[in-house]
Length: 344
Image (cartoon, rainbow, N blue to C red):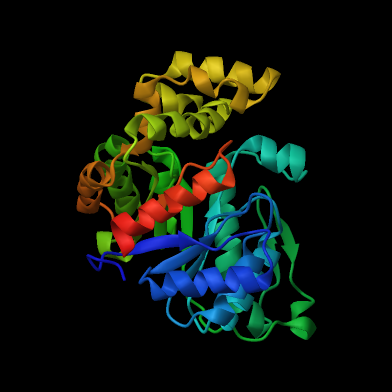
């Protein structure tokens, strides 16, 4: 069981048989975790969470994240209502922008101005959840989405389990953090956040959003994600962190985030390497300082001490092992180290 009764999140595996996803979800619930997430990378996040809903009774279930711009907001709302019914009211819809290339090049969907687009998506999803079952919705005309809901007079979905189903927004930098605090029920920090970013930079952005939304701090849950490489071989942990940092720093859309930490030049080298040969081939160029800034590395005692200040601002934590370009057995060793250090 979780040692300190603080709230931690885990992951439901994607691309796995239902029996495996369900068993791992139950195991994490039994360990005392507060919630479980499923990500949209090589799968949709809703299906793994459906398997988890069957095998669990207590943990909250969160899409972490569902790409906000990759599907119709109406479909997103229906999926959220389905998941809330399946989990007896334990579901949270977590939305994120992701990067432009994923939406436009892979999914073939408009990205636009992400802050304006996210605001519109959340507005539509909330409207559908609250009113679609009444048959009273008629039309929505926004910059990115246009809906004619007149057919819902005859094809209205059943009433949702909760008309106030919570919506969280994932963010990397301050503008989206502020928007999340303003219009949603939760702020999800990107796991590539540094500890100073989470504790010093982001709280001000949350306060600005709360002020715009006329909300109090306790009305919004703040979940901080952190990559963690806990190992008694500290040098090995730092080395294993490089590929995860290289993956994110290799994305041009993330350059300003890394530049804010003093690593613009390194990020540009990694972007060029990612374009020409893939991030894994240039991961060795990530300096130790950069690796340790964005992945919490060290012995179990060291990582525990490094993370402790985050609890001064966060309501819950998602601790993620470095995964990119590492063999499965190495990833699982870090999963076990996180569990032994924080949960059991």
